[in-house]
Structures are given as structure tokens and as C-alpha cells.
Length: 129
Picture (cartoon, rainbow, N blue to C red):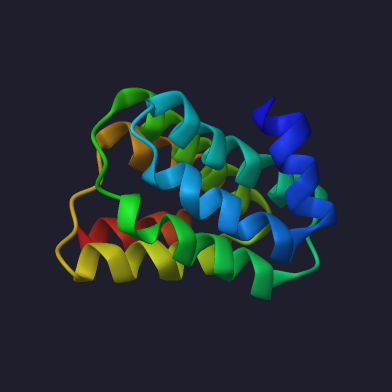
């Protein structure tokens, strides 16, 4: 559901879908929250030429970057991983900012986010740790 429905809606109706994703992130159900990360994954692999929208999605998940619920971490991490594949500079800047603000990302989320980043970007992140 998350990838094919929410992700598709995000690709085709970005502005109309954002309020729903914001509401899903506030839900108590970890699977609903996870769906947001999966939708971001789908969007990020389908829309690679609109970095401004990718930045909007990074801002959307920013308040949840320190989440500890494993299922939510996996979903958001999956979205970050795919952003890193197509926009490594955006993801690196975002993660460095989070770490410089003292935020503590789970090891699993960091592992997923670093998957496709080039060595130079991984070095920047290690220096921010």
C-alpha cells in the first residue's frame, strides 16, 4: 500500500499528498508512520529531477529523525537511502545538519542512509559524529 498507493500519490499529486503524510507521521501506529518513509522511497526513485521536492520531504521527516521504533526507522531509513542514491549532496547536507544539532540517529537509520553515499560524503558524516 505505502509504495504503490502513497508513493504514487506523492509522485503525481505532491502538494495534495503532503498533508496526508504529515498526518500519518502523527499516527500512533508504527506501520502508518513507516508508510511515509516507503512513500518517500518510491518518490525518490521515480522523481530524480526535482531536488526542491526532495528537500521538502527531508524537512517532513526531520522531526522523526531520532525515532527509535524499529519499523519506523526502517521505513524512514529506506526513504533516506533512496534519496542518497539520487541526491547524495542533499542527503549528506541534511544528515550533517542533524548531527551538528546534536541529534542522535539510530545505527540502523544511519546504516541505511549511508548505503549509496560516496566515500567523501561518508567521511563528512563521520567527522560530524
